[in-house]
Amino acid sequence: MEGQAELRYLGQKEKDRSRKLWEQCFKEDSSRFLDYYYKEKCKDNQILVLEHFNGYGDSEREVISMVQRNPYPVFWEGREYLLDYIVGVATEPQWRHQGCMRTLLNHMLADQNREQMPFTFLMPADPAIYQPFGFSYVYQQPDFCLNGKGELLRRERVRGEAQAAETGAWLNRWLENRYSAFALRTPAYMARLWKEIESEYGKWDLLYDGEEMVGMECFWGKEKPQRRFLYAEEAYLEKVCETRPAIMARIVNLNEFMGNVRLKGKEQRVEIGIVDEQIPENHGLFSWKITQGGSEIRKIGSEIPKEAWTISIGDLTQWMLGYGCQPNSWGITAGSRIFLDEIV
Image (tube, rainbow, N blue to C red; front, top):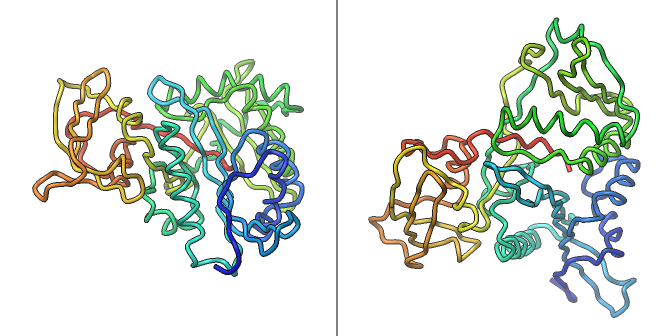
């Protein structure tokens, strides 16, 4: 790489400097949407960048590659975690295939590991980009529409962020009754969601059967509206097509993650080899104690014996989050029902 390159997180007042790269790499996003994103999502996210510069002034510094870490409060098996949803992964065309993204992702994973984040997640444009970094699919996106009964429900249009914020309590109950892991719909989450939907000319309706709220539906897009979400009681839904892979995840702090893994049956102790090519703390031979209340995992060696039962960090992520990678013969209960439908 000619000249000089610097790896760093942008300061709060600098985040707009990454917008040019976003516009260059994600042409499908409108200026109106990006106005929302850089005003709202960048209030609390982290933007890790590689900058290239040939001189000494800030005017000669250019963001050539970036990863954006958007924090979400996630409810997982009875506990709340602040997890990063990874978005805006981009590199200028002339700098691609030169190790920029590898540098960024490895640095990000090391930071998340130090921060004791159990796992991180993303929606891949191409899963092949992320599989070498230990990411694997953990969530299938369902595709439903309203059935005949649902089409008869009374609709009430959500008119602003205050009203949107009030719907979070209903949605949290709906999610908790069905899933063991999901982003918490706090008032702040729902108010921000309203702004996101409004930025793309969305229409958000609450659905009522008589006086009882039984769902909500949203379409967005100015020219060709598409469904942004549909949450409703099953009696009002019908499946449109089979589920499709949507969200990839990766364990980043093994100790923190495994503490939330539980057994339905009696306590077990096993030795397991874990292969993690990016995070040394997660790689090696481990002693794993699993109980009904949680589990503990302790590293007992950096080398993995040939005879050890061994699994990659990607396969372990899928198994522990219930994606069916390994036979669940031990009755492990962590995260078997996941719902992560965030966009940015």
